[in-house]
Length: 344
Image (tube, rainbow, N blue to C red):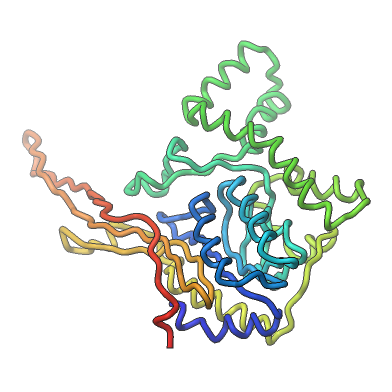
């Protein structure tokens, strides 16, 4: 909870001579979250409390999310300060990397990683995540580079160039991934190139050759959407990367460990484990945090009740078979505000 981290936040504000805002989108298996447009107004509430400081520090942990939501946050932060920096304690992937590229500098721990910003889409039309069949809301992100690679494999490795065959390949793909998802992902490709160019200009100035090399790597040439970009590699590409000293690193790590435990990221959302031997059990999962000393915590929460339904199947000349299914009654899913005024 914020009260357990408040002194650590004060240390960062003193160390960086800035105002701190923390943004963590949790990746608890089965309850993964991403950057989305609904965070914008919540950020405004926190930033309004800062009273236009010279400098804002964003502490960021995320595996990515909506590209335009990330772009909107970058521009929003820049409206509220003259100097904007990002602390990456562990992961700032995909759209999180986009947010980081917009900063004047990126403070990365030795285990911190950025990632390619080739666009991925995560919507209710995406394929269900087969790892969590018990949670129909768990979806698989779809990357434009993965779809592009699928067709490149067909053309280059399988030597398929006939239009009719390629049409059949597309129909097969669209039977697994909704056509609207495919269209939206490709539409965002040119968009991400424009955004990357705009953000990276400040890092490279007039060195267009070096900037284009970085843009191509971050947008497509890394080979995988999951490719981890360490601070050393990011610095080699010309980004303004800062390494924290050991004392500052400990503060960053202590915050990360505390939030990681609060969101219980290690343990996946498994209805069977929650139910145990019971037929009914309630749950509450804290999934996203936006918090600051001045404005308290905005937390995205899922609350519900799991019910195990059992029925007996009788087959001829066989013992009865008991089959069970789990019903997830989601009672609340959304943001709640926890006021900082309650902190002593």
